[in-house]
Length: 558
Image (tube, rainbow, N blue to C red):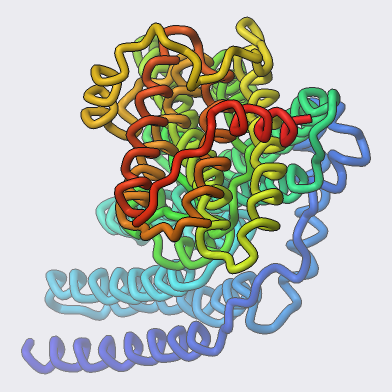
């Protein structure tokens, strides 16, 4: 009895090592190259001018993918080549081996309990091959078409193997459970990978938008140009999302397949991933590209490989028009576009049981997106303030201060006009231009000392931005607070102090003309405090006659 068991164990050890060694050599040999061709559905959609249905797109996609599968199978090193080799070499011989172990040897055994050794040997061989293939698939970036074909072929081989009636039900169940476990792990990974790539595609759309906005000049057509660009971005976002969902549908729902048992779990994972993507689209507008941190990136992506791809995309400047684009896009996104993305799931997976977001979840998403709109306006205020500060500070560090002063005034005046136009686009219901008022110096109704106290208590970016005036005063307070801090640390020669008075009056009168009546006193308080600090940092603080300052300012604005 012991000799019979020893011989059987020795034989099984030999065949198990042989099968797993051959399988490992094949798997290691496969480089798992990318598909020889990628179905470029975007070219197809652009040819159709985005006039398409989901059914048409799916039919075209399936036709092109069949062609790619046929060509990829012949490429040595591809995943489809590998699975074909395993089917021809491993599974073909394994069918014969199973018959030998479970039929021929079983009939010669005196101790029938030794049959369990044969069952265990078969299970370990099949599990080892499954694990080797799925590990290889996990290590490489392969597309869903390739994954789908691999599982279809493995499923077919298992069904063929199970035609042997000598395989008991318990062994069948254990093999199927292991296969399903590997399939579900790969499925989850492909869902996460698909939506990570969708995030990168959306960031590429934003880079495209930024580059396109850089060419725009201040004209009456700005709003039309921005809305046209938003339409393009919207079309491509919907198309990208549709393509990804079709990829994931083809992954598990072709007619030949039955390998994914927990379809509802898989569908819910797709829905949950889409909800996170919808949040991501809103969240990305709540960051300034040039100052995004590693921690913020980790919130957006959990894959270091993806983060490395994303960094160059985010490291771009955000122009004024980009913030206008962002604001308009987020408004559209909150009202209709985000709902359109969820409707795509129902269209793509029509006929399958998939949980739709509840009204409560949708309302939370809208609140989240509206919060991003608020943050985007705050970022716009911060970026605009920093831009103006850079312009104002330029002449303080220049040798040719007279020329620089004239240049600074001209640039700043044009920038202020552009900003006023931008406010009109953001808040068209309260659109108004610069209102010429009396000189800030001649205005005598303010309690200047009280206003100066208010200036000293003023905080930067403390306002919740929800209308034109709150955005405007946030920018003005930011600029003037930083300018005040700069002046406190700057030494002024007599000539520089005179030129500074001219520039300061010009800037303050511009801001005074911009703000509402309620904020005029604050501007006057800033003006007197900044002028007083500059005078204390000059040995001979000779003040220029206000009439002269007013005349110079009027000439600069002509």
